[in-house]
Length: 115
Length: 112
Image (cartoon, rainbow over all chains, first blue to last red; front, side, top):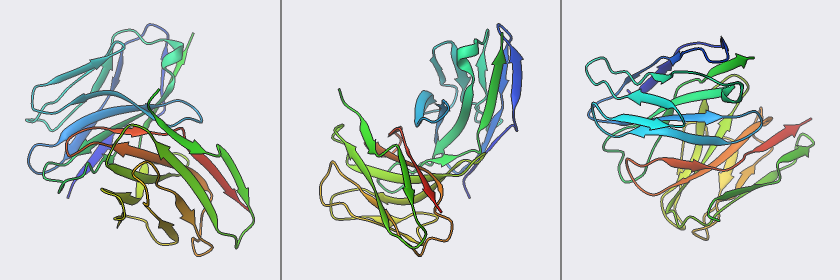
C-alpha cells in the first residue's frame, strides 16, 4: 500500500544551521509529493510540492527534490531561523486516486530552532 | 480573500452530546475533506466528498457523520458514539487528482 515515513523528531538546531528532514515513501506509479508546515495551534500550510520525478519544489528557502530511484523527498534549508520552528509533514497523493486528491501523511517532524 | 474557515476555534462539550463542526470554503473546490489530528501524530482521514450530495468514509469514520448540501459547506458531526472525540479537527478542500489540499485553521474539540 501507500505510505510515508519521516525521520523522528524533535530536530533541534541553532539559528543559521543547515536543515534536513528525511522523507521516504512507498507508492505504486507516480505519486505527487508535498511538504506541509504546521505552526502551533494552526492548520497546515502547503510549503512546496513536486509532481514528477526529478522535479524540485522550493519556497521560502526550503527545497525538496523528487527522487524516484530512492523513493525520497527530503526537505532542506540552508540557514534556518527561529521562525521556522514548527511541525513539518511529508505527504503523497497516489496516482490514479480515482478522481479525488487523497493525501497520505507522514507522522510529522517537529523542528525547534534556538537563537 | 479566498480560503477555508472553520468555527469555532475551540469547542467544549460534555460526554454524550453530539457536536457539529463547521467548515466553509470559497475557493470553488469540488472536493472537501475532514481529518483528525491527535497529539504527536499525523492526520487521519475521517470523511471526504467529491461533489455535492455525495460523500465517502475515510479511514476512521466510525462515530462521525457529515453532509454536503452545498458546494461551499461540509459540516462534521461528532456523535456520542465516538469513543475518543477529544482531538484537533482539520477541514481541507482541493481541486482534482494530483493537486494539493488547502487547510482551514482547525477546531480543537474537548469532551469531558
